[in-house]
Length: 224
Image (cartoon, rainbow, N blue to C red):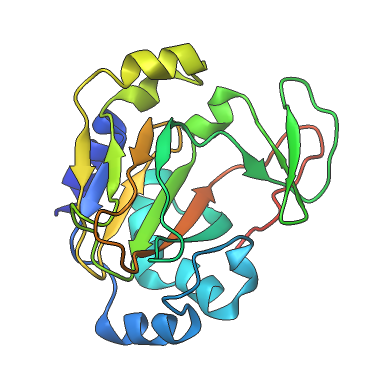
């Protein structure tokens, strides 16, 4: 996919699928650290090999075309559906960010703690300027719970549960991705995934990027 096409798709549709992203060597190095039996892990930017991935030329090139040269990684999460951990995710938006410490700032809230780290829901204007990159270490196909998205839903700001339900009635796209491919998406894109009909490993490293400081003394938990 040409750079222009994936940037245009992210802006208009809220996502873009890139069938080829990671080299075989990078895949081998990462798979040796992220075993197929592990089903989830937060604070993934604490892992050196993932930090290196987040600043690699391959990943940065994708992010820079959307967010600009000042962009940096702010969070990393491992998702994996396995025979022993097979779940579905209902239609939703990604609405929280990870910060260093809690500070009361207007329009930021509610707060929560995830894996020991303060998380907060910021205004829609913050989420709208972020980008998520989902890197696939196993093939994502129709039988193992692929990501489903509703094109254009990212342009409607933060939605209530009722509004998400209305969007869920619109046509969706199933994002099947080869091993080594990637999905770029805006966090406010309404998305979901089904459980696997044929349970098997489906490892995804989910990286989130921004290109701006937070207001009111809030700091990103990670800035890679």
